[in-house]
Length: 95
Image (cartoon, rainbow, N blue to C red; front, side):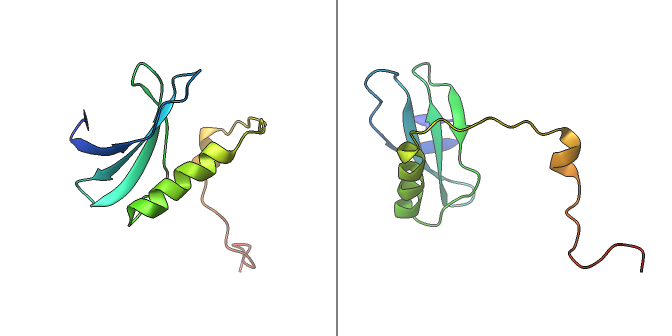
């Protein structure tokens, strides 16, 4: 199975009721491991933010996400919040 130019090396078992599944793959351009969470139509719902040097760490990250069963509140950010520089502690910019 391929995803664009990426070769999928391992696919987790689909969930029985919802038909969602995780895909772990080795990204050829960086030689680092990544994962996605896809639905039954093979559309990506979520993906990793960080990449992993080894397969075991990638699979461990998938297991962390799988273990979250409690509903979490949703939060919204504006584009300004995402791109605003983080202030340096102890400096006000007025020195």
